[in-house]
Image 1 (cartoon, rainbow, N blue to C red):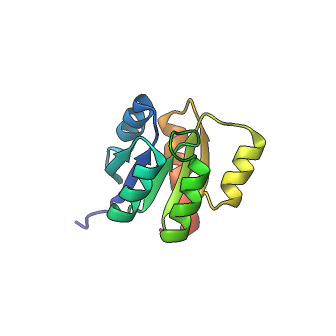
Image 2 (tube, rainbow, N blue to C red):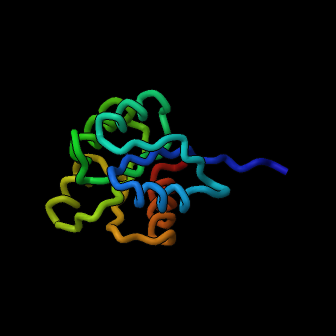
Amino acid sequence: MATRHRHTALIIDDDSMSRTILRTILTGDEYDVVGEANNGKKGIELALELKPEIVCLDHVMPEMSGLEVLLEIRKKLPGTLILMVTGSAERETVQAALKGGADGYVVKPFNSGRVLSALTQALAKAGK
């Protein structure tokens, strides 16, 4: 029986409850959470160190905004899928994230179905 490929994920969010919920959602057959960061600078450091396939990224954080982190990761790790998971549903923010290279956008509060669906769509679009 062939083993299924497990996708590695990094969670960057300043809210510990959001990180816990995302970790719980992603802990299963298809995903391994390889790291977590509570601010943008630490998130970039971990992304460069761990090179995850997927980054779940909040928009509003201390040190650097999610959009700044998105652009930096996109520049240094262009093959990484980035899913914005944030409380900001403002049209300008969503458009800026997608224009900046986000592969998906989920608005808080979220549930497992919405997060997993967005990840499945992003992975399929990327051919992974």
